[in-house]
Image (cartoon, rainbow, N blue to C red; front, side, top):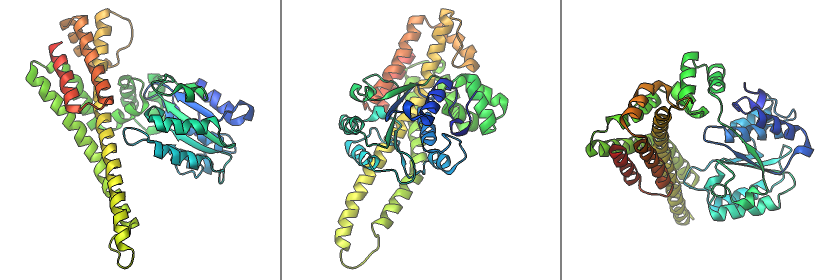
Length: 386
């Protein structure tokens, strides 16, 4: 079951909702810095946003008032959410945000800064944030989100000053319920999407709503058993990378053009008279910075698209290991059970494990900025060879 009000989108996290609701209502249970941890799809940023709404709401998260609506829609003047579009959060960006967070709230009880991917902070950005967390302004609250509180995700100096809220993978039943009741998805589609989402609410929603997402998943999960030679491996690698690039381009084109047009207007494109030359020089510098940010965002979008495919591949080999070992645990891809059993029969467990390790190594390589074509081709050769 899910909670109501501002907590309506927080799926399958009753313990966290209870703790956060108590803190929002009782100042003695409150602290200035929180760290939301949990696996992908557990709803870290959703929970942080709901908590921010409860902190700003006169009724501690009613879900109906102006404060709740504006926080949940991302338009509240005293709540700033950092969603890194590029590969990392820079020190300059964090310094600017920390300065804004230090201001007194304009209309609400708190000034709140939400950092949705704190694991992407550069070392300099983490140090800038640490100074603010160590000596926080009286009415400022920091809400950080990261996969875990491990030093690889969040520096121990920041972690030690935060109250940790661990989130868990939501159950398939709770995901199906929210898809049916809140998104209007037919119950059979909701149940299927929840069963193959790996506990990822957003993934389940995309699978339920978008036929193209379902088609892409089918193509990815069919790859392991279709590879007969190195030619197939390189062909599939090229298909995977091209699809990711096309998806990123589609997502970026309209937004990039709108940003460039907005900048041209802001910089006085077409103006005449004194100061035009100086303005033009400033515009060129701003355009270069915009191009840099757009390129970084496009790279991130490409890698995220590839990573979704890699997660699907990893889940296939994980299921093959489960079946091969005879373990009595649910499959991540119950709709592909026949193919999974075939793989478990044709490949020794050691071979399946090597394939799984190759997928995980590819994810690591992409995180370390290895060129996608090289990382994916290296993975596919292992998947073909076993």
